[in-house]
Image (cartoon, rainbow, N blue to C red):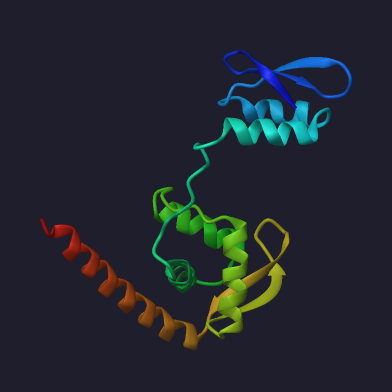
Length: 164
């Protein structure tokens, strides 16, 4: 538990029966994580939560449903595994769109359940076993629907933004 702040970035804590001082700079929190987490796991989570208040990494606040469209569009290039899909989207967007695994793989499963993509186990160019996805005919039709919906929505947003 924090017992008080002694200097910028430093907190005194009583981890067991003896007090100790831990200094964590927000910028260097990741560097200290491994070293400190072995000794003070619950304490570290508290420190990082306190230090990161208001500084959470921003998630993509993209338009709802756009991830499905981006995946379908990327698969028009050919058969790809999940990581390759996310990398191609990231490169094509000039690093503006970063897709986390926690978003990508559920989306791939959803698209496969809808019949818009097909997935088969295969081997990547790096000789790793992975699920390789391809766009289906139904997926091409859905991509056209999603693209049209996206164009209408972005035009509507542009009209609103042009108003004074």
